[in-house]
Length: 197
Image (cartoon, rainbow, N blue to C red; front, top):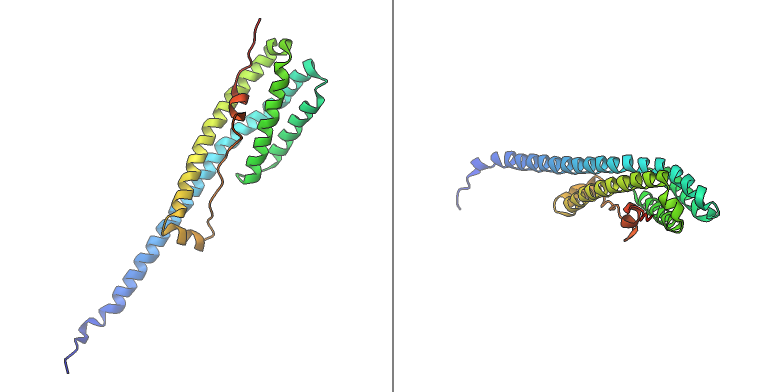
């Protein structure tokens, strides 16, 4: 029978305790990283939200300018107003908000299509000013949306990786949606009207 060296046994609980402590500290670090990324994403959406509210403020003036020249296009004007109200009523950065903003962009595209049919409207100084402001706001929204989508991608990628996916699942983190609009709407809304004399 061989003699067992029992002197190492008291170190075993200490080593296990240190390992568990390191594991807990690592999990805390991963959790804090996910929180920081979620906050960054929220701040990025707040930047979009500011620009969206500027767009909301421009829309009534734009609708009134078009109404002065194309008042009989009531369905288009009502669609823009309803889409604006719907988009303004949805809060947060969820899929419902993004869908509402996509509908608003589509309604604005319809409004601009109506404006194309009225040369006097396109030549109107107030309409040109409003379109220039809208174009500027749409450019700012596009830039803020790119920043938001980058923050979303970073959050989602981090959350998908091990061990963040385990820590994230324990604390209820989930993949977040990107802010996307239908292809072509963004360029159409940002484009300045083609004014010919």
